[in-house]
Amino acid sequence: MPELPEVETSRRGIEPHLVGATILHAHIRNGRLRWPVSDEIYRLSDTPVLSVQRRAKISTAGAA
Image (tube, rainbow, N blue to C red; front, side, top):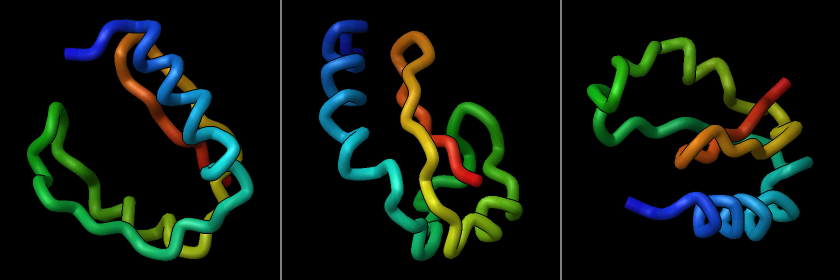
């Protein structure tokens, strides 16, 4: 498992490439991750990415 500085470095590295980009489609390879993935994820198509955050050792992207 990565350490916090590695996750933060990765977040900072991908942020300029993701923020402002548009989500074209969602593809779920494993629907049983930590929690079940809702079918609502498919509604993210054509949605812009507004932010990239880190919470502990997990990076997340915020969309409109």
